[in-house]
Length: 211
Image 1 (cartoon, rainbow, N blue to C red):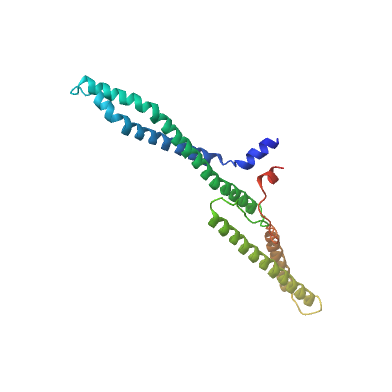
Image 2: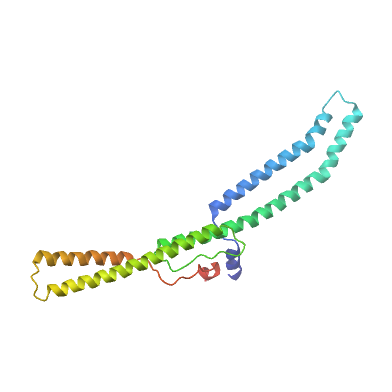
């Protein structure tokens, strides 16, 4: 179980995106190998098939092809491995932030605004991290202002209701309208309370979410 959690923490999974990048890497690697093979072997192979050349020249071309096989493919394989490792490390610096952003969007959809995004030290998408956190700061501030405004509106309605019950000449339609305003305001408060704002926390790590 601990091993599974560690692996999940180190390698976040966004399947469709990962498979897409894997396919692109394989295609690019195949194109590199094909281009390298053509450039390296084609001249000598053409010499081997050229009937105008002497037997010795064609034999030398065949020898060169065999000699190149001994170093070309190990070099190509090493290059592909190096590129794959580099691409994988770079990919993790992108997929990690995307994984956190997706979690943040899910939290926003559930009404939770009590968090801030904090990426790892070497992750990419720092500008997007700052923009998202700034957006959350703004939304939290606006939401707190709305809550304060609704509290003040309730106080005003309470004062009006007290005035209406002290013998002032309020007609029944006016009292009904006042009650309707209170109901509308209560609906607004209910909608606003869906969002949880105030103190901010950072996005928990994968191990904390999986615990």
